[in-house]
Image (tube, rainbow, N blue to C red; front, side, top):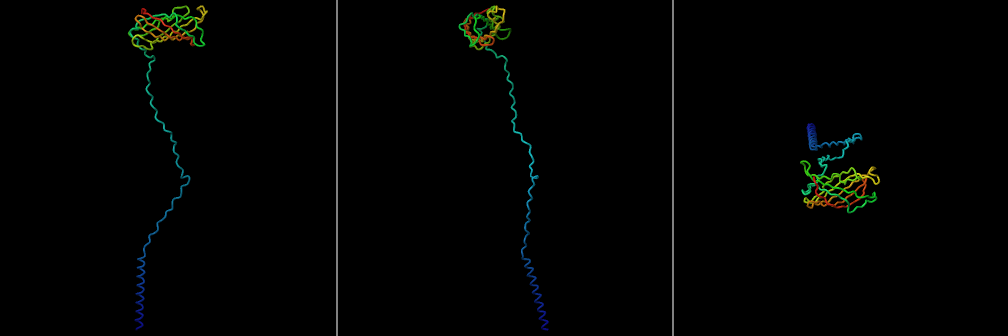
Length: 234
């Protein structure tokens, strides 16, 4: 009997020991910390191939050009500049003859000079129709002579003081027979540009002048003269 009780006691002890061991194991399993899984490392993508790395070509950029500046409006320029207006004392016709000159000088390497051809000047400052007063120059500009033909001239006003003084420029052209031609042979062209300094003194116009002459469109002479113009019928 005692053996049986002892055996039972040993079995109980063994059961208790086994129960205690499993309980301790469960406790150890419960106390053991739960480790979180390691983060997943993602490998970087492989580098693109040369074909994938090609950069699309951009269209070439044109240099910047500023917009064109609009052209200014055309400026209307009169074909003939208006001439100064002469004072009333110049109205009417004035006439004078230049028989000789005070001085004359031949241009360098120019053709030799002959005799001075007397010049006649007839200036008329008059109204044509109902228009403004206009200045006309002579009928021929040259004293009638068998040495001269085809004479013509014109005059223009340069300046005036508005009282009794005016500066004018006269253009005279004529053809002159060559020496020894007996007035039937060839001629040469003569052009004279005369600067006139005119001063009204009562019924007279005192004039001094400088003349530049050209022969066949080449410089020929420079002359200086003075004279007096008087009133003439219209």
